[in-house]
Image (cartoon, rainbow, N blue to C red; front, side):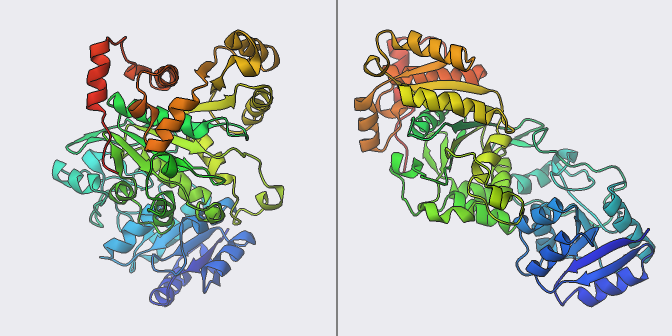
Length: 481
């Protein structure tokens, strides 16, 4: 059986590549695509098994590769010898198989057939190479080659080294599956394997139950405990983390990181530049400044940003949008952007989920329905947080009344109750600080600290004395903005 190939390469490589494929056994070129739209439409037609692209093919990005994968088309890259920048880009985009000019036709045919069938390493020492820290596997790469400790420095700086073409790649694929193992920086002078930063998604129904306040306070509290934390604003309906922490609204943030991911240039160093530290141990990746810019955040890019974030800090906290509805008119088309795909991707990528609801009759009804809705999509077991608890909205002994309602109608046990504290929250918002900074001993802040204890139990604080709390406040002062 002949494997069908479509090409999406620049004019610099097209003739050489097509000539090589024509001489290879078991493969044939069915379409030579002039641009990315033609490549995607041809891939969607079902006539191709493999697409071969070049790093300089105009318009090629992560979302295009995701579209091809969604239609069962596997991708290889044609990279010239010595083109380190091109190789680094296609690897960043997630292309695992590299083909070199001058490869033997029989070897080329074998690689393409194996790629089409999904068998073997689909690579050869003459066609694929990769370098990885301390002999570990580079995520998204095929094969490994051992390097010295000196090579780790370039990786920590977000500049993966490119190994020689003679590196050994005859074994099975040595990639990292999403959600399994990975790499995690232990600091500027260390590298821990295989630990990965944890991701916690903060989500809740419509009605402003306090998702952003919970997310900001949780991130700040974890940072105050010595856990390096990244707060990511992925709310495509009303991003507000920047305003909450008095950050520059138009500063690069998640949109810049997503653009870099789409172009294959996102690494640890570039991510750290668009996610600055706002206080000791706390970085922030601000959200889109205008809701109409939501198409900039595509699912493939968001997934990659979150994966890269795991190598930057110890814990990632995501402020999600409220809607998880799948647009039926767009869901059939894997190429079309979907506004809620950002939240759905965040929930699927997270290790723990905090669902926030308001402590009033409307908020509780929405919370019960929200828990039922989130249960049918890929997401972790939720931790329930009932925010703005007050007797005026639910009657005497509000915590007991709410616990009874949630247990009876939703089977939810042991929710975390956060008291109504408008004065403390208003003061923090006016100052552009988190509650951990502006009101560290307030009941609302102590209640939210229990969320940190549950999502990061190894960082739980021992009961503190008054002097201990004073030392903590001095240590976690307001950082540069």
